[in-house]
Length: 295
Image 1 (cartoon, rainbow, N blue to C red):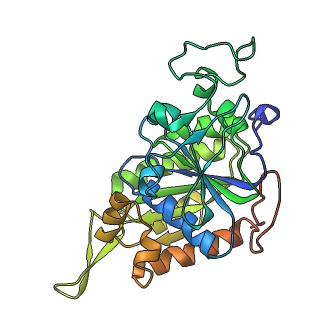
Image 2 (spheres, rainbow, N blue to C red):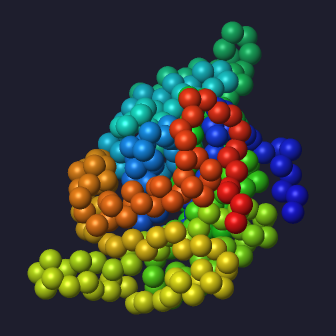
């Protein structure tokens, strides 16, 4: 299917751009994105994240990076540098306090002339994901994750704007979430997107008091969704309440609780993802989108 690829943005100095999508909110997608990115960095990869949820950005908060100064020149945006060398670009610059932005223009649309001309970047052009992605200057990244807003329309917008190596679909185990995810996977295939796999988040939790494994939500069957869609089930991750605590504190769960079952499974997921997108070896510089391994 032709998605107008000639008009899509190829992220600057990025080998593989991967959209992290969910059909519904509440799947823990953003917290998982942060920790998956961190695990890849611990494996020696250079990783970035675009927080593409314009209405409810959270990645910088989850990494303890808000507020930070964002440098915007006439034609480029410098990502914020986070722990483990992660580079973060927040699409919604309006989420920043104006004191945290170094830019030749205000964000209210009343543009001042800069050297006798309007700057190339304005708040109106940055409202479009492709223009924002074109302006971000990542520094030799192996992988950049796009943390999308929930829903199929957000995935479609990303697919139309940016050259993607593929998509990861994050869901939880409730029947309604799995039904919605089936629709998202169908839409991804109709868009011609490669789907790396499904991640079933918050599958079970470990009860310390009763020393047993309990279901957290009404149980659907992610394995059946995988079979019916032909998309691999990459992981079934347990719920750990400490994950929510760490993102609120702006620290990495996978470092603070590295020996937990959840952190170990995210580490295994990171290795599996590298194999899926042919990034077993780190690179010092590569441009363009990555390619999924043949099935």
